[in-house]
Amino acid sequence: MEQPIDFVVTWVDGQDEAWRKERAKYCATDGEDNGECRYRDWGLLSYWFRGVEAFAPWVRRVHFVTWGHLPPWLNTECPKLHIVRHEDYIPREFLPTFNSNVLEIYLHRIPELSERFVYFNDDVYLLRPVKPD
Image (cartoon, rainbow, N blue to C red; front, side, top):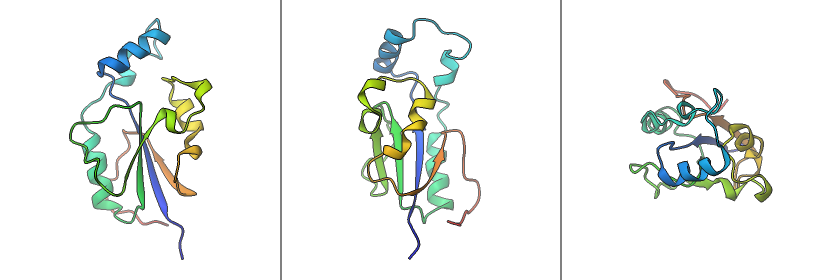
């Protein structure tokens, strides 16, 4: 029997006021590498999910990593969807974090994550069918 494959995608809503206030407590200045443009949501995430549904229906589960905010259109009742908040898998001493490297280094700690998984940023899309191999 083949091992299941999961997908992991990270996302942030840089317009979320609660998130912006939290970030402002820890990130006093907007330098070149920490400007608002790094956290902008272009409204394209629904196309990521559509691509997965259309081109990788074999995926066991999608682990949606977020600070806590969710897109209003997201079907949170989907049985393949696992919403993962940062505190669900990142050690407490490294929270809060606004750094993608921290999010990525602890991905292996996501509860119920398959041993085989594919990590996506929210700007990488499936545009044609893909096979598990």
